[in-house]
Length: 124
Image (cartoon, rainbow, N blue to C red):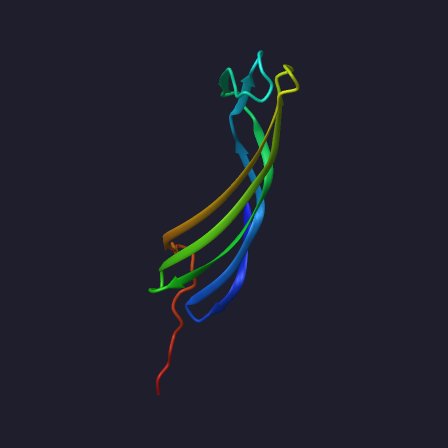
């Protein structure tokens, strides 16, 4: 969930965006019963529900090339925080941070179903 605010120059918009990010991610368990620091004996990828809440910030540009059509280019950074995972053997603690850098390009169409009618221009 993000908000967007910016400055428009005729048909060109420069904006910033920010809000709350939600996501899920897998949990990785590593088990090494023999040697500390010698690498994992096996990895187990758990697909349990691991909901995370973080933030999203970014910015972009948008240009309306026709009345209802526009193109945009946007950058977005999301951070969903850390996941700590300890399997209890030899103090093997895994610490993961979920960060994403996203670049989007888009084509938008604006539906104007409830827009105001065109202004009436009188000529004398």
